[in-house]
Length: 489
Image (cartoon, rainbow, N blue to C red; front, side):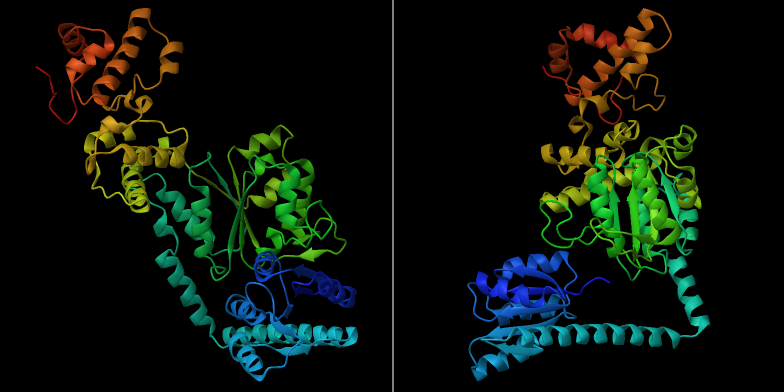
Protein backbone atom coordinates (compact mmCIF):
# COMPACT_ATOMS: atom_id res chain seq x y z
CA UNK A 1 0.00 0.00 0.00
CA UNK A 2 1.08 3.60 -0.58
CA UNK A 3 2.68 5.14 2.48
CA UNK A 4 1.07 8.32 3.88
CA UNK A 5 2.99 11.49 3.07
CA UNK A 6 4.42 13.73 5.78
CA UNK A 7 6.07 17.11 5.21
CA UNK A 8 8.98 18.11 7.46
CA UNK A 9 9.85 21.83 7.64
CA UNK A 10 12.92 23.07 9.50
CA UNK A 11 15.75 25.48 8.64
CA UNK A 12 18.33 23.25 10.34
CA UNK A 13 19.55 20.41 8.06
CA UNK A 14 20.51 18.08 10.91
CA UNK A 15 17.01 18.40 12.40
CA UNK A 16 15.45 17.48 9.04
CA UNK A 17 17.75 14.45 8.74
CA UNK A 18 16.90 13.30 12.25
CA UNK A 19 13.15 13.59 11.65
CA UNK A 20 13.43 11.77 8.31
CA UNK A 21 15.36 8.89 9.95
CA UNK A 22 12.69 8.58 12.61
CA UNK A 23 9.74 8.48 10.17
CA UNK A 24 10.92 7.18 6.77
CA UNK A 25 10.13 3.52 7.50
CA UNK A 26 6.44 4.29 7.97
CA UNK A 27 5.94 7.48 5.95
CA UNK A 28 6.84 9.03 2.61
CA UNK A 29 8.85 12.02 3.88
CA UNK A 30 9.17 15.37 2.07
CA UNK A 31 11.56 18.01 3.42
CA UNK A 32 11.72 21.80 3.13
CA UNK A 33 14.07 24.40 4.62
CA UNK A 34 11.54 27.25 4.78
CA UNK A 35 7.88 28.13 4.31
CA UNK A 36 8.27 28.99 0.62
CA UNK A 37 9.72 25.59 -0.28
CA UNK A 38 7.09 23.87 1.85
CA UNK A 39 4.24 25.67 0.07
CA UNK A 40 5.63 24.59 -3.31
CA UNK A 41 5.69 20.95 -2.16
CA UNK A 42 2.11 21.25 -0.91
CA UNK A 43 1.04 22.37 -4.39
CA UNK A 44 2.31 19.16 -6.03
CA UNK A 45 1.82 16.49 -3.35
CA UNK A 46 -0.98 14.94 -1.33
CA UNK A 47 0.29 15.70 2.20
CA UNK A 48 -1.50 14.28 5.23
CA UNK A 49 0.68 15.55 8.11
CA UNK A 50 3.06 18.53 8.56
CA UNK A 51 5.78 18.83 11.20
CA UNK A 52 6.99 22.44 11.22
CA UNK A 53 9.59 24.22 13.34
CA UNK A 54 8.31 27.41 14.98
CA UNK A 55 11.37 29.66 14.65
CA UNK A 56 12.58 29.93 11.04
CA UNK A 57 13.89 32.76 8.83
CA UNK A 58 11.07 34.52 7.01
CA UNK A 59 7.69 33.12 8.01
CA UNK A 60 7.45 31.50 11.40
CA UNK A 61 5.91 28.08 11.84
CA UNK A 62 2.61 29.53 13.10
CA UNK A 63 2.39 31.92 10.13
CA UNK A 64 3.06 29.15 7.61
CA UNK A 65 0.62 26.72 9.23
CA UNK A 66 -2.02 29.47 9.28
CA UNK A 67 -1.68 29.68 5.48
CA UNK A 68 -1.87 25.88 5.29
CA UNK A 69 -5.06 25.90 7.33
CA UNK A 70 -6.68 28.26 4.79
CA UNK A 71 -5.52 26.43 1.64
CA UNK A 72 -5.29 22.77 2.78
CA UNK A 73 -7.52 22.55 5.86
CA UNK A 74 -7.61 18.74 5.87
CA UNK A 75 -3.84 18.43 6.48
CA UNK A 76 -3.03 17.77 10.16
CA UNK A 77 -0.63 20.42 11.50
CA UNK A 78 1.99 19.77 14.22
CA UNK A 79 4.48 22.37 15.43
CA UNK A 80 7.91 21.70 16.90
CA UNK A 81 9.34 24.28 19.30
CA UNK A 82 12.08 24.62 21.86
CA UNK A 83 10.09 27.26 23.68
CA UNK A 84 6.96 27.01 25.78
CA UNK A 85 5.65 30.56 25.83
CA UNK A 86 1.95 30.52 26.64
CA UNK A 87 1.17 33.34 24.22
CA UNK A 88 2.80 31.48 21.33
CA UNK A 89 0.80 28.35 22.12
CA UNK A 90 -2.48 30.25 22.27
CA UNK A 91 -1.72 32.02 18.98
CA UNK A 92 -0.85 28.73 17.31
CA UNK A 93 -4.07 27.08 18.46
CA UNK A 94 -6.25 30.04 17.45
CA UNK A 95 -4.57 31.05 14.17
CA UNK A 96 -3.15 27.85 12.74
CA UNK A 97 -5.42 25.20 14.26
CA UNK A 98 -2.47 23.23 15.64
CA UNK A 99 -3.24 19.60 16.43
CA UNK A 100 -0.23 18.98 18.71
CA UNK A 101 2.95 20.57 20.10
CA UNK A 102 6.23 18.63 20.10
CA UNK A 103 8.92 20.16 22.29
CA UNK A 104 12.66 19.94 21.70
CA UNK A 105 14.52 17.75 22.37
CA UNK A 106 12.14 15.05 21.14
CA UNK A 107 12.56 11.27 21.18
CA UNK A 108 12.21 9.33 17.87
CA UNK A 109 9.46 7.15 19.35
CA UNK A 110 7.59 10.27 20.47
CA UNK A 111 7.81 11.76 16.95
CA UNK A 112 6.71 8.51 15.30
CA UNK A 113 3.73 8.14 17.63
CA UNK A 114 2.66 11.75 16.95
CA UNK A 115 2.89 11.14 13.19
CA UNK A 116 0.86 7.92 13.35
CA UNK A 117 -1.84 9.52 15.49
CA UNK A 118 -2.04 12.52 13.12
CA UNK A 119 -2.24 10.27 10.06
CA UNK A 120 -5.01 8.26 11.71
CA UNK A 121 -6.85 11.49 12.52
CA UNK A 122 -6.51 12.56 8.86
CA UNK A 123 -8.04 9.27 7.63
CA UNK A 124 -10.86 9.50 10.17
CA UNK A 125 -11.65 13.05 9.02
CA UNK A 126 -11.73 11.97 5.37
CA UNK A 127 -13.94 9.00 6.16
CA UNK A 128 -16.27 11.21 8.18
CA UNK A 129 -16.46 13.66 5.26
CA UNK A 130 -17.24 10.82 2.84
CA UNK A 131 -19.97 9.42 5.09
CA UNK A 132 -21.48 12.89 5.56
CA UNK A 133 -21.63 13.39 1.80
CA UNK A 134 -23.16 9.97 1.26
CA UNK A 135 -25.76 10.66 3.92
CA UNK A 136 -26.54 14.01 2.34
CA UNK A 137 -27.07 12.53 -1.11
CA UNK A 138 -28.97 9.49 0.16
CA UNK A 139 -31.35 11.90 1.83
CA UNK A 140 -32.46 13.20 -1.54
CA UNK A 141 -35.27 11.44 -3.32
CA UNK A 142 -34.83 9.90 -6.75
CA UNK A 143 -37.29 12.39 -8.16
CA UNK A 144 -35.19 15.25 -6.83
CA UNK A 145 -32.06 13.86 -8.44
CA UNK A 146 -33.74 13.47 -11.81
CA UNK A 147 -35.07 17.00 -11.62
CA UNK A 148 -31.59 18.33 -10.92
CA UNK A 149 -30.22 16.46 -13.92
CA UNK A 150 -33.00 17.76 -16.17
CA UNK A 151 -32.38 21.30 -14.93
CA UNK A 152 -28.67 21.02 -15.69
CA UNK A 153 -29.44 19.80 -19.20
CA UNK A 154 -31.98 22.57 -19.80
CA UNK A 155 -29.67 25.29 -18.64
CA UNK A 156 -26.76 23.81 -20.59
CA UNK A 157 -24.19 24.81 -17.98
CA UNK A 158 -20.99 25.47 -19.85
CA UNK A 159 -22.34 25.41 -23.40
CA UNK A 160 -23.41 29.05 -23.30
CA UNK A 161 -19.72 29.94 -23.44
CA UNK A 162 -19.33 28.34 -26.88
CA UNK A 163 -19.96 31.41 -29.04
CA UNK A 164 -21.69 30.95 -32.41
CA UNK A 165 -24.29 32.48 -34.72
CA UNK A 166 -27.97 31.44 -34.48
CA UNK A 167 -27.70 29.29 -37.62
CA UNK A 168 -24.19 27.97 -36.95
CA UNK A 169 -23.18 24.50 -38.26
CA UNK A 170 -21.97 23.95 -34.71
CA UNK A 171 -25.52 23.89 -33.32
CA UNK A 172 -26.39 20.23 -34.07
CA UNK A 173 -23.00 19.14 -32.74
CA UNK A 174 -23.54 20.99 -29.47
CA UNK A 175 -27.03 19.51 -29.22
CA UNK A 176 -25.53 16.04 -29.43
CA UNK A 177 -22.76 17.00 -26.97
CA UNK A 178 -25.37 18.12 -24.43
CA UNK A 179 -27.08 14.75 -24.78
CA UNK A 180 -23.89 12.76 -24.28
CA UNK A 181 -22.69 14.96 -21.43
CA UNK A 182 -25.10 13.44 -18.91
CA UNK A 183 -24.09 9.85 -19.79
CA UNK A 184 -20.82 8.69 -18.25
CA UNK A 185 -19.32 7.28 -21.46
CA UNK A 186 -16.11 8.06 -23.41
CA UNK A 187 -16.53 10.58 -26.24
CA UNK A 188 -14.08 11.20 -29.09
CA UNK A 189 -13.91 14.74 -30.50
CA UNK A 190 -12.36 15.03 -33.97
CA UNK A 191 -11.33 18.35 -35.46
CA UNK A 192 -8.39 20.46 -36.56
CA UNK A 193 -6.11 22.10 -34.03
CA UNK A 194 -7.76 25.24 -32.66
CA UNK A 195 -11.28 24.28 -33.74
CA UNK A 196 -12.60 24.38 -30.16
CA UNK A 197 -12.43 20.75 -28.99
CA UNK A 198 -11.15 21.66 -25.52
CA UNK A 199 -13.91 24.21 -24.99
CA UNK A 200 -16.60 21.69 -25.94
CA UNK A 201 -15.03 19.01 -23.72
CA UNK A 202 -15.02 21.45 -20.80
CA UNK A 203 -18.67 22.32 -21.44
CA UNK A 204 -19.54 18.60 -21.43
CA UNK A 205 -17.84 18.20 -18.06
CA UNK A 206 -19.70 21.11 -16.47
CA UNK A 207 -22.99 19.75 -17.78
CA UNK A 208 -22.32 16.24 -16.44
CA UNK A 209 -22.91 14.71 -13.03
CA UNK A 210 -19.18 15.20 -12.34
CA UNK A 211 -19.43 18.99 -12.59
CA UNK A 212 -18.58 19.39 -8.90
CA UNK A 213 -15.20 17.76 -9.54
CA UNK A 214 -12.14 19.03 -11.39
CA UNK A 215 -11.58 19.13 -15.15
CA UNK A 216 -8.06 18.43 -16.43
CA UNK A 217 -6.66 18.51 -19.96
CA UNK A 218 -3.47 17.35 -21.63
CA UNK A 219 -2.48 18.01 -25.24
CA UNK A 220 -0.16 15.19 -26.33
CA UNK A 221 0.81 16.87 -29.60
CA UNK A 222 4.50 17.67 -29.61
CA UNK A 223 5.21 15.83 -26.34
CA UNK A 224 7.61 12.91 -26.11
CA UNK A 225 6.23 9.53 -24.96
CA UNK A 226 8.22 9.88 -21.73
CA UNK A 227 6.69 13.28 -20.97
CA UNK A 228 3.16 12.02 -21.66
CA UNK A 229 3.69 8.96 -19.47
CA UNK A 230 5.00 11.09 -16.61
CA UNK A 231 2.10 13.57 -16.81
CA UNK A 232 -0.55 10.84 -17.02
CA UNK A 233 0.68 8.17 -14.63
CA UNK A 234 2.88 10.15 -12.25
CA UNK A 235 6.09 8.80 -10.74
CA UNK A 236 7.50 7.57 -7.48
CA UNK A 237 10.37 9.40 -5.87
CA UNK A 238 13.66 8.51 -7.53
CA UNK A 239 12.09 6.89 -10.59
CA UNK A 240 13.25 9.73 -12.84
CA UNK A 241 16.31 11.90 -12.46
CA UNK A 242 15.46 15.29 -11.03
CA UNK A 243 12.27 14.18 -9.24
CA UNK A 244 12.96 14.14 -5.49
CA UNK A 245 9.40 13.39 -4.38
CA UNK A 246 6.34 11.54 -5.56
CA UNK A 247 4.67 13.15 -8.58
CA UNK A 248 0.90 12.79 -8.84
CA UNK A 249 -0.29 12.06 -12.36
CA UNK A 250 -3.42 13.37 -14.05
CA UNK A 251 -5.11 9.97 -13.83
CA UNK A 252 -4.98 10.26 -10.06
CA UNK A 253 -5.80 13.97 -9.94
CA UNK A 254 -8.85 13.50 -12.18
CA UNK A 255 -10.34 10.75 -9.99
CA UNK A 256 -14.14 11.25 -9.94
CA UNK A 257 -13.65 14.16 -12.35
CA UNK A 258 -12.97 14.46 -16.09
CA UNK A 259 -9.74 14.23 -18.11
CA UNK A 260 -9.62 15.51 -21.70
CA UNK A 261 -6.73 13.90 -23.59
CA UNK A 262 -6.15 15.78 -26.85
CA UNK A 263 -3.96 14.70 -29.76
CA UNK A 264 -4.23 10.98 -29.02
CA UNK A 265 -3.29 10.12 -32.59
CA UNK A 266 0.32 10.84 -31.58
CA UNK A 267 0.46 8.24 -28.79
CA UNK A 268 3.15 5.57 -29.09
CA UNK A 269 2.11 1.86 -29.25
CA UNK A 270 3.21 1.34 -25.64
CA UNK A 271 1.17 4.31 -24.41
CA UNK A 272 -1.83 3.10 -26.40
CA UNK A 273 -1.62 -0.24 -24.59
CA UNK A 274 -1.34 1.43 -21.18
CA UNK A 275 -4.24 3.75 -21.96
CA UNK A 276 -6.36 0.77 -23.04
CA UNK A 277 -5.87 -0.73 -19.59
CA UNK A 278 -6.98 2.53 -17.98
CA UNK A 279 -10.10 2.70 -20.15
CA UNK A 280 -11.12 -0.95 -19.69
CA UNK A 281 -10.00 -1.62 -16.10
CA UNK A 282 -9.50 1.82 -14.56
CA UNK A 283 -6.04 0.65 -13.41
CA UNK A 284 -2.52 2.01 -13.88
CA UNK A 285 0.95 1.99 -12.31
CA UNK A 286 3.01 5.12 -11.61
CA UNK A 287 6.54 5.18 -13.02
CA UNK A 288 8.88 3.38 -10.64
CA UNK A 289 5.99 1.98 -8.62
CA UNK A 290 4.96 -1.63 -8.17
CA UNK A 291 1.49 -1.12 -6.74
CA UNK A 292 -1.54 -0.92 -9.02
CA UNK A 293 -3.67 2.17 -8.54
CA UNK A 294 -7.24 2.74 -9.70
CA UNK A 295 -9.05 5.79 -10.99
CA UNK A 296 -12.71 6.56 -11.46
CA UNK A 297 -12.50 9.37 -14.00
CA UNK A 298 -14.38 10.15 -17.18
CA UNK A 299 -12.09 10.18 -20.21
CA UNK A 300 -12.84 12.50 -23.13
CA UNK A 301 -10.39 12.36 -26.03
CA UNK A 302 -9.59 14.54 -29.02
CA UNK A 303 -7.87 13.88 -32.32
CA UNK A 304 -6.72 16.25 -35.05
CA UNK A 305 -7.22 13.58 -37.73
CA UNK A 306 -9.69 10.84 -38.58
CA UNK A 307 -8.66 7.91 -36.39
CA UNK A 308 -10.44 5.39 -38.60
CA UNK A 309 -7.79 5.96 -41.26
CA UNK A 310 -5.05 5.49 -38.65
CA UNK A 311 -6.64 2.21 -37.56
CA UNK A 312 -6.87 1.05 -41.17
CA UNK A 313 -3.17 1.85 -41.67
CA UNK A 314 -2.20 -0.03 -38.51
CA UNK A 315 -0.98 3.14 -36.76
CA UNK A 316 -3.61 3.10 -33.99
CA UNK A 317 -4.98 0.17 -31.99
CA UNK A 318 -8.45 -0.81 -33.12
CA UNK A 319 -9.46 -2.01 -29.63
CA UNK A 320 -8.43 1.35 -28.11
CA UNK A 321 -10.24 3.27 -30.84
CA UNK A 322 -13.53 1.47 -30.18
CA UNK A 323 -13.07 1.79 -26.42
CA UNK A 324 -12.65 5.56 -26.73
CA UNK A 325 -15.31 6.26 -29.34
CA UNK A 326 -18.62 5.21 -27.87
CA UNK A 327 -19.60 8.21 -29.94
CA UNK A 328 -17.75 10.69 -32.14
CA UNK A 329 -18.28 14.42 -32.51
CA UNK A 330 -16.78 16.02 -35.62
CA UNK A 331 -15.99 19.68 -34.90
CA UNK A 332 -15.95 21.80 -38.09
CA UNK A 333 -13.01 24.16 -38.66
CA UNK A 334 -13.53 27.90 -38.67
CA UNK A 335 -13.63 28.04 -42.48
CA UNK A 336 -16.66 25.73 -42.30
CA UNK A 337 -18.57 28.20 -40.10
CA UNK A 338 -18.09 31.64 -41.72
CA UNK A 339 -21.26 32.94 -40.10
CA UNK A 340 -19.66 32.55 -36.66
CA UNK A 341 -16.59 34.64 -37.46
CA UNK A 342 -18.22 38.03 -36.85
CA UNK A 343 -19.49 36.93 -33.41
CA UNK A 344 -16.15 35.41 -32.48
CA UNK A 345 -14.05 38.29 -33.79
CA UNK A 346 -16.02 40.95 -31.91
CA UNK A 347 -15.93 38.88 -28.71
CA UNK A 348 -12.18 38.23 -28.98
CA UNK A 349 -11.57 41.90 -29.70
CA UNK A 350 -13.44 43.08 -26.62
CA UNK A 351 -11.65 40.49 -24.48
CA UNK A 352 -8.27 41.67 -25.79
CA UNK A 353 -9.26 45.32 -25.29
CA UNK A 354 -10.18 44.66 -21.67
CA UNK A 355 -7.03 42.62 -21.09
CA UNK A 356 -4.75 45.34 -22.51
CA UNK A 357 -6.71 48.34 -21.25
CA UNK A 358 -7.41 49.83 -24.68
CA UNK A 359 -11.14 50.57 -25.16
CA UNK A 360 -12.68 50.09 -28.62
CA UNK A 361 -16.19 50.02 -30.06
CA UNK A 362 -15.75 47.07 -32.42
CA UNK A 363 -14.91 46.11 -35.99
CA UNK A 364 -16.24 47.88 -39.07
CA UNK A 365 -18.53 46.06 -41.50
CA UNK A 366 -15.87 46.06 -44.19
CA UNK A 367 -13.29 44.59 -41.80
CA UNK A 368 -15.72 41.82 -40.91
CA UNK A 369 -16.26 41.07 -44.60
CA UNK A 370 -12.55 40.45 -45.08
CA UNK A 371 -12.32 38.35 -41.92
CA UNK A 372 -15.31 36.23 -42.91
CA UNK A 373 -13.88 35.55 -46.35
CA UNK A 374 -10.55 34.14 -45.11
CA UNK A 375 -9.94 30.41 -44.63
CA UNK A 376 -8.30 30.62 -41.15
CA UNK A 377 -6.01 27.58 -41.29
CA UNK A 378 -5.01 28.32 -37.69
CA UNK A 379 -8.68 28.44 -36.63
CA UNK A 380 -9.60 30.22 -33.38
CA UNK A 381 -6.04 30.94 -32.27
CA UNK A 382 -5.19 32.59 -35.60
CA UNK A 383 -8.35 34.73 -35.38
CA UNK A 384 -7.48 35.74 -31.83
CA UNK A 385 -3.94 36.68 -32.89
CA UNK A 386 -5.26 38.75 -35.80
CA UNK A 387 -7.75 40.83 -33.79
CA UNK A 388 -5.13 41.38 -31.07
CA UNK A 389 -2.66 42.66 -33.65
CA UNK A 390 -5.35 44.95 -35.10
CA UNK A 391 -6.06 46.29 -31.61
CA UNK A 392 -2.39 47.09 -31.03
CA UNK A 393 -2.14 49.26 -34.16
CA UNK A 394 -5.64 50.77 -33.99
CA UNK A 395 -5.94 54.57 -33.80
CA UNK A 396 -9.75 54.75 -33.88
CA UNK A 397 -12.45 53.16 -31.73
CA UNK A 398 -13.85 51.36 -34.81
CA UNK A 399 -11.24 49.06 -36.34
CA UNK A 400 -11.18 49.19 -40.14
CA UNK A 401 -9.83 46.80 -42.79
CA UNK A 402 -6.58 48.75 -43.22
CA UNK A 403 -5.38 47.09 -39.99
CA UNK A 404 -5.84 43.54 -41.30
CA UNK A 405 -2.84 41.46 -42.36
CA UNK A 406 -1.99 41.56 -46.04
CA UNK A 407 -2.66 37.87 -46.76
CA UNK A 408 -6.20 38.27 -45.41
CA UNK A 409 -6.83 41.49 -47.33
CA UNK A 410 -6.12 39.65 -50.55
CA UNK A 411 -9.28 37.58 -50.10
CA UNK A 412 -12.18 38.84 -52.21
CA UNK A 413 -14.89 40.25 -49.89
CA UNK A 414 -17.56 39.67 -52.54
CA UNK A 415 -17.76 36.07 -51.34
CA UNK A 416 -17.24 34.23 -54.63
CA UNK A 417 -13.77 33.14 -53.46
CA UNK A 418 -12.31 32.81 -56.98
CA UNK A 419 -9.00 34.43 -56.08
CA UNK A 420 -8.58 33.64 -52.41
CA UNK A 421 -5.41 31.55 -52.55
CA UNK A 422 -2.29 32.26 -54.55
CA UNK A 423 -1.42 28.58 -54.46
CA UNK A 424 -4.70 27.68 -56.12
CA UNK A 425 -4.19 30.34 -58.79
CA UNK A 426 -0.72 29.04 -59.57
CA UNK A 427 -1.88 25.43 -59.93
CA UNK A 428 -5.37 26.00 -61.32
CA UNK A 429 -6.45 25.49 -64.91
CA UNK A 430 -6.85 28.40 -67.32
CA UNK A 431 -4.81 30.60 -69.60
CA UNK A 432 -1.74 32.47 -68.40
CA UNK A 433 -3.55 35.78 -68.95
CA UNK A 434 -6.52 34.77 -66.74
CA UNK A 435 -4.33 33.48 -63.95
CA UNK A 436 -2.05 36.54 -63.95
CA UNK A 437 -5.12 38.80 -63.82
CA UNK A 438 -6.40 37.00 -60.69
CA UNK A 439 -3.10 37.61 -58.92
CA UNK A 440 -3.09 41.25 -60.07
CA UNK A 441 -6.60 41.72 -58.68
CA UNK A 442 -5.45 40.44 -55.30
CA UNK A 443 -2.49 42.81 -55.16
CA UNK A 444 -4.59 45.82 -56.19
CA UNK A 445 -7.32 45.11 -53.66
CA UNK A 446 -4.88 44.48 -50.79
CA UNK A 447 -2.82 47.63 -51.49
CA UNK A 448 -5.83 49.95 -51.78
CA UNK A 449 -7.49 48.58 -48.65
CA UNK A 450 -4.29 48.85 -46.61
CA UNK A 451 -3.79 52.47 -47.77
CA UNK A 452 -7.44 53.35 -47.07
CA UNK A 453 -8.15 53.79 -50.79
CA UNK A 454 -5.67 56.60 -51.20
CA UNK A 455 -5.15 56.12 -54.94
CA UNK A 456 -2.18 58.47 -55.20
CA UNK A 457 -0.21 56.53 -52.59
CA UNK A 458 -1.31 53.21 -54.07
CA UNK A 459 -0.22 54.23 -57.58
CA UNK A 460 3.15 55.36 -56.27
CA UNK A 461 3.70 52.13 -54.32
CA UNK A 462 2.72 49.95 -57.29
CA UNK A 463 4.72 51.98 -59.82
CA UNK A 464 1.64 53.03 -61.80
CA UNK A 465 0.28 56.35 -62.91
CA UNK A 466 -3.04 57.49 -61.51
CA UNK A 467 -4.61 57.02 -64.93
CA UNK A 468 -3.12 53.52 -65.20
CA UNK A 469 -4.38 52.58 -61.73
CA UNK A 470 -7.88 53.88 -62.49
CA UNK A 471 -7.94 51.92 -65.72
CA UNK A 472 -7.08 48.69 -63.92
CA UNK A 473 -9.72 49.31 -61.24
CA UNK A 474 -12.35 49.90 -63.91
CA UNK A 475 -11.23 46.83 -65.84
CA UNK A 476 -11.49 44.49 -62.83
CA UNK A 477 -14.49 46.20 -61.26
CA UNK A 478 -12.69 46.84 -57.98
CA UNK A 479 -14.51 49.37 -55.81
CA UNK A 480 -14.42 50.29 -52.11
CA UNK A 481 -16.96 48.20 -50.22
CA UNK A 482 -18.25 50.58 -47.59
CA UNK A 483 -16.55 53.93 -48.01
CA UNK A 484 -15.75 56.47 -50.74
CA UNK A 485 -12.21 56.57 -52.10
CA UNK A 486 -9.86 59.18 -50.61
CA UNK A 487 -7.74 60.95 -53.21
CA UNK A 488 -4.87 63.37 -52.85
CA UNK A 489 -4.60 66.61 -54.84
